[in-house]
Length: 230
Image (cartoon, rainbow, N blue to C red):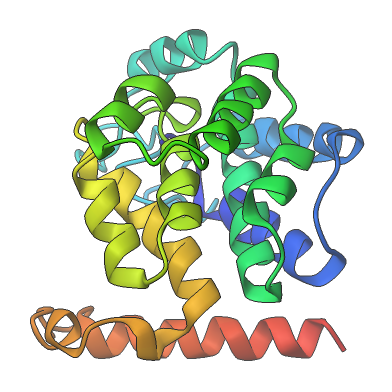
């Protein structure tokens, strides 16, 4: 999913602090996304870009190139596609933290007919208990946000535990790490860190930016969200 750290952080903050976003609020988010993408990248990447997701050029070989970005944007209905998918995901995570209906909150932010239709299909699938492979085929399992967010939201909504949500998402096929990461974010927001199997946590590498670093970032994000909420 081609989004920047700034887009995700802004969307999550908005959803957590002010409640679910509405379609009317997407114009400003899209404008911010365009400004972020159009700003020049210096060697230190001042826009706060996340490697692997933005066009930082040859100085950052792990980042996507401009042609790749253009192609992905056209497949998703224009440059706002990835940004809008990130807003939908952020709304689902925030709803999970509040104990609200994640599909309802995600649907309230869906600004494109394709996303609205996919989330409607996800709602109907909750009554059918389909296999993960079937969910991947019906809701999408690609690396693009509009083609993976609905499956991730379904996996979390249909599963009673963190491990079940992540395991289901992995079995949807396609870009499994993307779908499982998003499903885990939603289920983790709903169930809390204690719901993550200790064996999974212990198995994480713990280098300079490993397990302890990630846990510290999570604590810092939570504390900042509480402070900004007043």
